[in-house]
Length: 506
Image 1 (cartoon, rainbow, N blue to C red):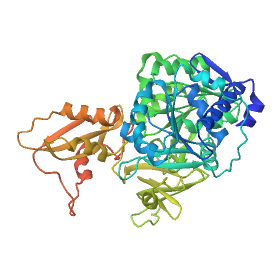
Image 2 (cartoon, helix red, strand yellow):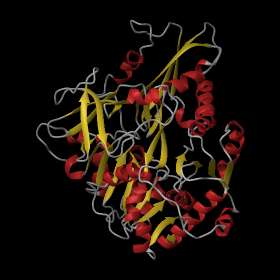
Image 3 (cartoon, helix red, strand yellow):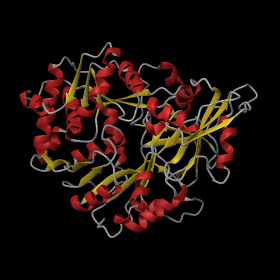
Image 4 (spheres, rainbow, N blue to C red):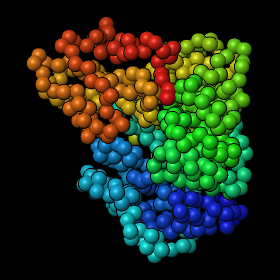
């Protein structure tokens, strides 16, 4: 990062709204924040939680943690307070830095976090705090295998699992994303619609290293995004399929100048064929698709020449990507043995950017890592031309609008109502979000609870993106397997009868 500053000091590194910072200015803010965190008691290797939207301050933390050898632990703004407590406590965060509008929530849970020393709020006085901090680069030794970031993902129990990246593995993951992308040139602009604290952050450093400019949006709107692409001459960006669908549905997207775009990556959830083809017609051959997980990535990617190709023996338009050159990908049966090419099984992978373990969770680690291979929990097939296809999920996880949702979380909240005897939650197709949770509840005779009450209850306790779109009430017991477990697959099957795979895209 320092080398990129030396080579591009006067170039624009960051844009957020009307604010523009050069590499020199952005790096100095990173140094000052690093010194501020160290002055508040952080030591190299300590974990620093963050709750933030995209903005200059979120970029500051990326630089600061690299400089001070601190480990970022980004929180999800749409998560519940309970999830925040779990993520911060599990990683023993010493400090938390939050945007001002999240301060009340963070301060309310501070008492549940014995390892937490301080909460730093980015309020009106924050830039003054930075200005008072030293601009002298701290002298800190960094080993490539020291931890740099801990990102959370879902686990089989529904609680977030912490995936730790070292400096080495994070750089490898970020680098390999760009293997099939067009070359990044100095001055190229990359638009971050999603949070740089999460998926979009994989593109932040490759752009920085090449002297490009990271353009930050703090919230998504189709109108604002197409306006920024045109005004700022954006070359790279990453979108969820739902965002791309919103752009296509927005009347103002037609007639815009998309000629600056080199690469629009569609990730986080499957994309529908009609959306891909319509986007290509509107914007040209700039669409890329990628598949991977926080635990291992990148696994499979493809550009427009591969995605929209006519390849005998393959169906590229229905694939999620082609196996990446620096990833090993196989499809296994239930005994962890590779299946013949074209057969269906669980997708497993190895890559330089994969996790070494779940933080503080050896049991879940043993479930997900077998002989160095990461078991993805996704069911798919790999054809003879290297195209990878998603067919179903081995787990019960629901992916709705790019967010991972675990049925157990919703079931716990719904089952607490006295009218509910038992409940099963599973994913069903949704025209906008790809998939959405549906809850089937066995209720007591004479029940009074309403569908809307349970939907609101889930939204209030877990976050709005977790709420079920429908709640179905019945008096008869839920269907069960031979060993007495609720059979979610049997319950959801009628809702998927008219689609050719058991995962859905926007």
